[in-house]
Image: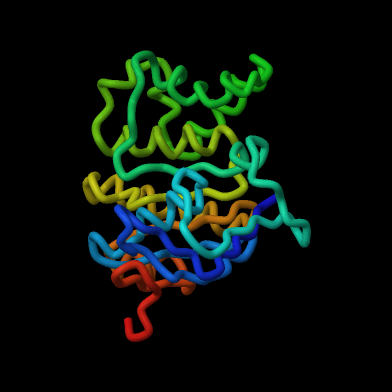
Length: 218
């Protein structure tokens, strides 16, 4: 199942100064949306707000499962995940890194193995499962971060410039993966990028941001 997300007049202030919004948009369940804009346009702030990692100072943010509005509690937070532009890699193997989120959720050990293996197949890293994670290349580490997110089976997947620090080979792989995942229509995907060509390749649902708002003239 996937989640819908509705933002209404959302604003964010830093030190009393408005830096984001007002922002209103509906991310429909099971769709792939790309938020495009230059550095400083508010893309990362938007994704952190959607991940419930950053508070809002005005407006509303609502999550829906079909027509039911959900409480913004720990249960909902575990249905949403954000992948940052540069993945944090923990000490231990690739398996250990991907299993982390499942272990803190007290998943069954046999289920952990199965879900980690499935996630690694999805990102093409099955052959790295026993490798020390901190020896991965930057592109492989970013794919590990996506696999870690996939393993917990999020219903809302937020990707903050997932190809910003990787080479062309890994960029192409990540783009193909996002398109493939989007076609399954089981996960709502919201991704940010500054690359118009990439945005247009991934979806027709593109939001252009400038100075914390949706640009009227992209």
